[in-house]
Image 1 (cartoon, rainbow, N blue to C red):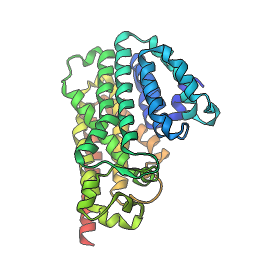
Image 2 (cartoon, rainbow, N blue to C red):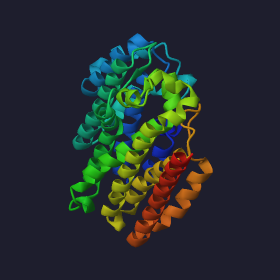
Image 3 (cartoon, rainbow, N blue to C red):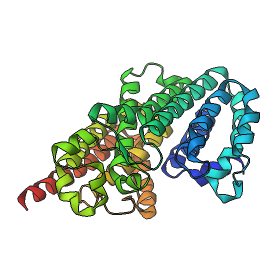
Image 4 (cartoon, helix red, strand yellow):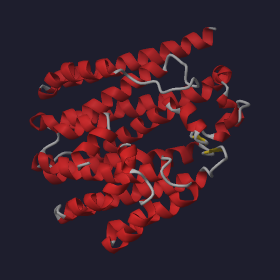
Amino acid sequence: MTSQELLKATSRAFYLSLRVLPPGARQTMSLAYLLARCADSVSDGLWLPADERQPALSELIACLGDRSQLDAWRHRVAAVDPARGGEAALLHHLPQALLELDRLPSPDQDLVVGIVTTLAQGMTVDLQRFPPGQLGSVWDAAELRRHLWAAAGCVGQFWTAVIRLHEPRLAQVSTRLEQLGTRLGNALQLTNVLRDISGDLADGRCYLPARQLLEIGLKPSDLEDPATEKQLEPVYRRWLEEACADFAASREYMLLIPWTCWRLRLAALWPWAMGVATLVKLAGGGWLRPGKIKVSRGWVYSMILTTTPTVVVTPWLRRTLERQLSHLQREVSQAGAQKVGQ
């Protein structure tokens, strides 16, 4: 499979944003995404035995700086059948992706190597935090926030650095753009944590802090029973509100980008809007039921059609963002009030 085919096969929301980026930034972002997904396939997939995942991540990091390490990588993934799907194919695509990386300008290469290394190191921490065959958990709020940054907040910084590199019109934009990019990344990752509780538990992972669960009389293993959802309510809604706050702050990210850079506005707006809409669904409950709560494909297409015309007119964009955010805050507030009244 080509890099373009693998992008389509392994991404959903992110692929939408990649398609509207300017060509230079698009190539850099696409390669970074493929390399990061390759690391993710090692960490979370079923392609390698559990005891090989940390060594494989170390080899991937080594390959980023030394192409002579690719022979060890090829040997590591030789038994994985690339025909089993996009993630399996990604493991065999690493040499080609690194060849494409070598063709990028040096500043782009440095950014890609930096972000993929950071993400892979964060995955290594997760492998240590969640030993195979055991249910592990982050301990407290500070540890969860470190995970949010290592998994996605750093991606917001990287995204901003790349678009600044390729778009001269952003040279004078406030340095707050990097901070807001981090908050947008944190918001998106926290949304993933809140919607994937049952799936993460099945993989032996609990990202809701064990210390906070203990304060309400729960253990991570208790969350495997959907009947504990009512008891979980105080902790869950605390993080739901934190995600709302990050989305509220990060709306300024799109507004700081000049309207003439409308493609960059769209590339940030679409994941923001999908994250906000997902939180609206989460506000209604059902967090511990099997399966992910997510927006439909039809909703995504409708969102693209309705938001695209707004990005070239800043007042329209501001109203769109405020309307979606107000809807989210209203749903979260009303759902919380209903629970209190029950």
